Length: 164
Length: 133
Image 1 (cartoon, chains in turn orange, red):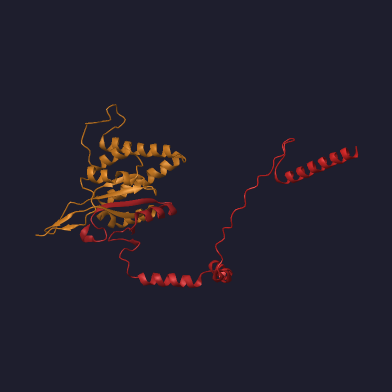
Image 2: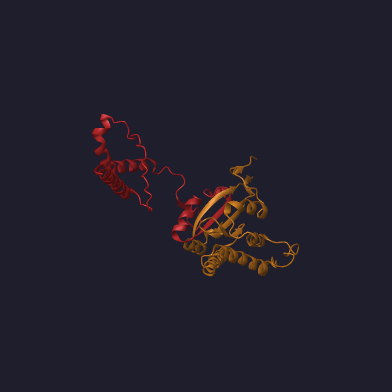
């Protein structure tokens, strides 16, 4: 969330996005210390289809880089697809597959799909997810992101302050 | 003979009359004349008349069609009642450099209207309260 306090990030997001938030999990406060809790930043089309996710807290430079990448990739996809939704879908899928190969060394087009080659960090897992299911709806994927990528349980419980 | 001639004239006259009335309601295909379909009369569906409504109908319609000056005044007054009581304003920054709408559906609608994308933050805890985020 600290990245979102950065002025440059704020201006860029205000120029290209309308922002909102949703509580999907909780954490515990014990002895004044926060235990658990996480954050996922979704970049979506206006109909809630996920273009990209930043899983976990990041610094301002990373948030700005990812936001710019989404905006430019989406603009290019709009241009190239010429109004064809299937082509738009394919361009977004390829964009994630390209980053997965270049930045994480995993080629999903390889004969073995690159399985078992190496462990993936959170950004790598996000690219793998969106290369497999581009433009998936937020409501279809948020549990998977929070529970399988971030390792937090989705919960409607309020924040609990544990007694000493 | 004259009786036969009269009968022929009467038949021709009747045929001509039937054709003219049929032409007015349906096209004629060759020599076949299709009789117009006549639906049974529907029962009257008007609400039972009451002297109270009859006298005020025109005035009531005019009041609905006209700008509802008194109704506007009433809705503003109701909004005034809730002013300052809202605990979740439509847009807030919550200590960030971004204005957040508290309702994702509303943000999605706004993004569509403004030709923008949607930035949606999913988090643990209460975003509105810095201690619980």
